[in-house]
Amino acid sequence: MNKANLKRMLHIDAEMHGLNNLDDEYIFFYDETNNTRKLYVTDDNTLNVPTVSNFVLGGIVCDEKSKPFDILELRQRLKLHKNIEEIKTKNIAKGNFEEAISSKKLNGFLKWLYEHKVYIHYSDTDPIYWSITDIIDSVLVENRDLFPDHFMLKAELNAVLVTHFDYTIYLLGKFNYPDIPPEVLPKFVEKILELVENHDYEGESTEEHFNHMMLKGVIQMAKKQEKMEFIQGQKGKSLIDGFAAFYINRIIRFEKSYHCFDVEPVLIEKIKNSPLIHKEVKDSFSFKDSKDEVGIQVSDVVVGILGKLFTFMRLNSVKDLELFYSSLSEVGKENLRLIGILTDISNTRCKAFLNRLGSIYDRQKELILLQH
Image 1: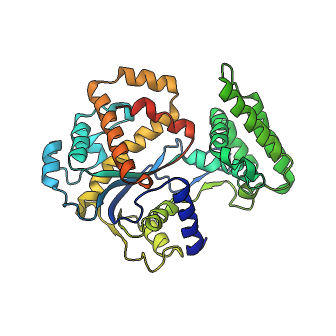
Image 2 (image 1 turned 60 degrees about the vertical axis):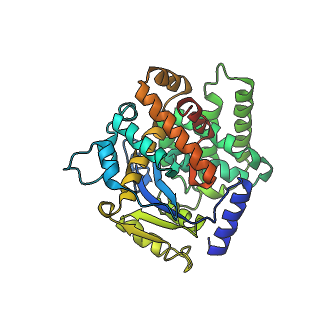
Image 3 (image 1 turned 135 degrees about the vertical axis):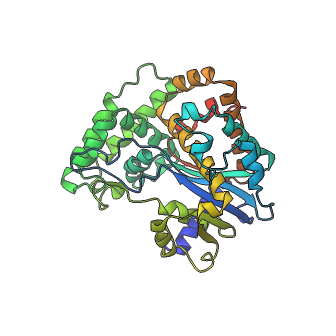
């Protein structure tokens, strides 16, 4: 995609979703969490990583004229030992999500963000959802009248396939997804249809039943296609080849802002050499050592807790999340409330600060935990 097409796509996306204040001048600070670098199916048709957590790129963002951070005040608030050189998630909210969310240090950190009117920003990605929903896109590209329902269809397919996770990965490997040979494409679609038809939807509501039937119909439509554009002709068994596109997207999306990234040697070259990084934005971003930039240190904690939160929500049912919330300590509930408030404040300032690439069913779970 060239620069003109990317800008056109971003403009259409901004209008479609009512994205506001994109041309204001901000300073973005970034860190990342759960970067697997690559996600692929191995020779024995299993994933190359034992667990798949949500990849989160993000941190904090300030209006350009904001005052610099008082690192000493923050360290005193968090009661960090002098031997701790950098502010990191492991010093503030260590352990799994259940442990981290009730941290008193995290409580002090979130209150500090709120009191200093610091916005948060993030791109949250469910790697499995991102990998498998090209199946739906491959059908919709030839049936554009169904596009208004694409989020629902992707969420339905995702719900089916992750329920049968190991078998799904086996199928992706066996059929060399996303480079499925033409002669076996019908068989692949047939296997996916079998999973949809045999999925347990007992007790579903009328709406859920309708969505399920609609997904079934869409997969049946795929049986009539001679080709499926997005799952053929790619790199076989390679689900994700890197996350550089997310960095580039932020730079282009907020081209009038300044972006400060943590040092990532591999990404530096990919981003700087990307044809999408045109001369107007070449001076709008930099890579700094987190030891020298407190904004990156603060961002480490933001993405650290968000990565744990989003992964926890994805892997648990609505019922389990309700039970979890009811059993939380008061500190844990207040921390979730503060995350919800910071999310709303940031979303009001600019909707594009917050981006989630995942099932709409998982996004709806925010209402359970981030209530305030």
